Image (cartoon, rainbow, N blue to C red; front, side, top):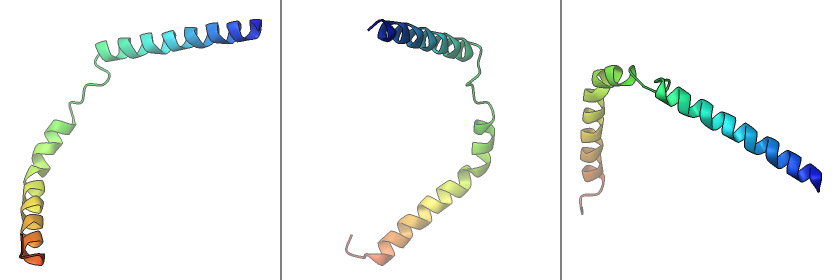
Length: 65
């Protein structure tokens, strides 16, 4: 039974360590994405064109809509 208490204590300690590491990395800006918005504006027109063409194809395939 004492082994369960030891393992529980170790697992909670490791979980707290990883949680603190996660909080520190979020506060330091590790997960800030500064690259995707600059690339997204380059491909935005292609996404709009593809969405428009798929709507046209859908109406041609099933004219009862």
